[in-house]
Amino acid sequence: MNAHTTTLLVIGGGPGGYVAAIRAGQLGIATTLVESGNLGGTCLNVGCIPSKALIHAADEFEKTTHFADGSALGISVPSASIDLAQTTRWKDGIVTRMTGGVASLLKKSGVQVIKGHARIIDGKTVEITGDGESVQRIGCQHLLLATGSYTTELPFMPFGGRVISATEALSPTVAPQRMVVVGAGYIGLELGIAYRKLGAHVSVVEAKDSVLPAYDVDLTKAVATSLKGLGVELHLGCSVLGMNAGQDAVRVRGANGDEFELAADQVLVAVGRRPRTQGFGLEGLMLDMAGQFIKVDDQCRTSMRDVWAIGDVTGEPMLAHRAMAQGEMIAEIIAGKKRHFMPAAIPAVCFTDPELVVVGLTPQEAKAAGMDCIDALFPFSANGRSMTLESKDGFVRVVARRDNHLIVGWQAVGKSVSELSAAFSQSLEMGARLEDIGSTIHAHPTLGEAIQEAALRALGHALHI
Ligand code: FAD
Ligand code: NAD
Image (cartoon, rainbow, N blue to C red; front, side, top):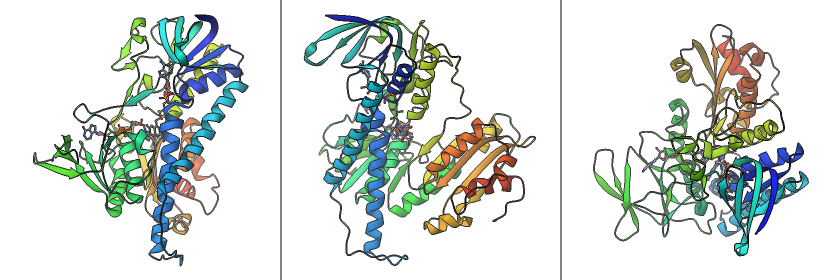
């Protein structure tokens, strides 16, 4: 058995682990990263990037379909078709380029990358089983757990056959005729809408009473309307019971207790993700847990000295940018810098049609927190750029303290609003007030002008409405 020691040992090469390792390498910390699958983790291989690639392809195809029916723009094409196997190859090309990029960055930072399954022996020792069952033992001063999460399976409807997870849904070769999506959360709606645009008949079954139940209803109303327009069938307040005997339909209990079946060539189950805390000896450390997640403090320290944890394995929100921010911080703390994970806000973006962005507090959350706030929204129907993009639905909303106008939240819904999230986050991190945003020159014509106008409206003097 091989044996060596390192200062920092990272288990997991997803956005949390690889960012921690790159930054540690930059800071001159001897770092080893162990990854059993592909570098980039869920995010680059079967999550953020491939899903956005598929969503883009579906949007382009849908647009072309409309052009085949003629369009207000005067564009027409004879007919539209899509070769989904080629779309998947294109998406795979992006993934390969990005995971290869991560490998190069790790190499450039001097990080030792080991492909293999890590098993914790104790807080300072990890055993790695690589290809061909070769085993090596690594001693470390700091152990970083970045093992991520995995898809939740419904016990009465396990994956296999027609029942698939997002991973399979991200590599289609043909679109199913009828897809049933279980769960109207992030994945269910992002991919459900994409599949609808690719030509599938899509039905969504959601246990709660609204789509994207974690989001503010003012925002999700627009998504619900769009789903209707796209022809996505919604079954809210319903629970799935399993596949029927013929395995070609999903049995559903309706909101009134009635039972019915939804025919399905494919069933995409997207009912959440669970932290990966088993199968690698974690229990031996007897760390304090926060429910199913590893408990960490505001420096991502676990209850054991020099054992750290970041990303999905540490809790909500399970988002790539949270994992990356924590990873960067850990490396700096180990290098001796004073850092704490106390962001003013962690932006949440849903890449549905229309897109949603939430950064900081909604008016309801501010009220619930006992804050006296004002809020104002600016609709894209009054924004010139939106009109030129054939999209006048949606709005930007700002929430600010009444007394000193400190901005505490932004929300937006509409086409391409994901790109506004940077401005929202910056304004919160920098402690901007309504006057700061209202008096900043925003380029014309851009969607960003709606940000300035929302701030001006909260101050009582919007210019374009
Ligand atoms: P992961 O990315 O899960 O990486 C963990 C890694 O650890 C894996 O590569 C795994 O193989 C490895 N590992 C685990 N155990 C071991 C072991 N014992 N030995 C060796 N290696 C091990 N988030 C966003 O912010 N924006 C999005 O648009 C977005 N879209 C998504 C779309 C989909 C379909 C899915 C499924 C997720 C999406 N997410 C998105 C969530 C995002 O992918 C995760 O929040 C993010 O990947 C978490 O990063 P992580 O480093 O904590 O874990
Ligand atoms: P989710 O938590 O976003 O949504 C799950 C949905 O399934 C919820 O609405 C829930 O009420 C519903 N549900 C649960 N059990 C059900 C049942 N038995 N029958 C019907 N409905 C049921 O989870 P997800 O969509 O699987 O995504 C997992 C995680 O991945 C997200 O929480 C997020 O952290 C991450 N993600 C983020 C993005 C993004 O940032 N744009 C995109 C995709 C995924």
